[in-house]
Image (tube, rainbow, N blue to C red):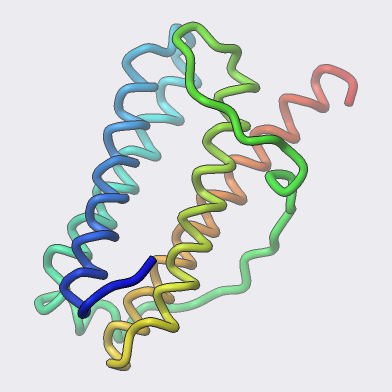
Length: 153
């Protein structure tokens, strides 16, 4: 990824976040089990917050300044699953695998973008977004671990 300026970086991040909103919203509409549907609706709403944060960056600087970072342990479950494409009707565990990989990539994106930003406010923005994606990754990996444990793994 090469960018001309910070506007290109923000535009790219926005595109990725809007894609994530659509991905989770679409999953929530297709999922037949209410619990899974609620999980994916929740992720869609979380990704919408990221869109709002990026779009309203100038207005959100004070909010970003107050953001409390926390240590998010990495279960690393997504490190051991292969990347797959979404197919209609795929099993819940496969959807979780797919979503874990997506969040892993989003986390890596924001970690990479921190190094491309030359303004401390933008570095903070990308650190906040990286932490939020780490939370999503952990949540999905935990759901996956729980589902696997129920199956005897």
